[in-house]
Image 1 (cartoon, rainbow, N blue to C red):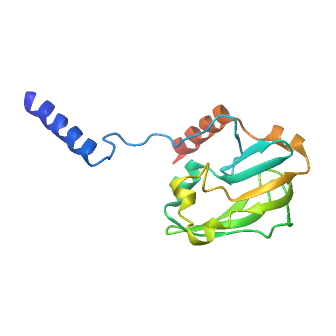
Image 2 (image 1 turned 90 degrees about the vertical axis):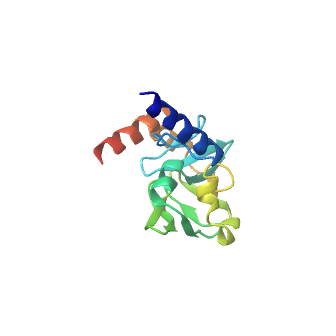
Length: 158
């Protein structure tokens, strides 16, 4: 019994030194004050504009992102419709807009550093900024609590 406890303590110290977790990561990060689509995109609303990206949950399932297809500034996006794609070492996945409006900015930094989507999905890995055309659409999106439950239910099906 004491031997098992000392091995666990040793493994924990080694993991700490190597900066790895000794426990499996249960759930991805979900931020408050964002809205979430069931296709795993997030929206941060600031006045009449919104920043859009893919969630930590989505990037975690995709694996290492190697390319992000961005729309043109000035193009229109519609809620639930595809506006780009994320290509990873595992798969290519469409990015759907959680909100309708006009694209006013794209994150050109992703051209040279697509891994920002993995490293910082809610900050440096944002994908587009949109001038919102219908703020009522935000009501159909999930808050952080509903999105967390949605992800838990989705995980339990796999």
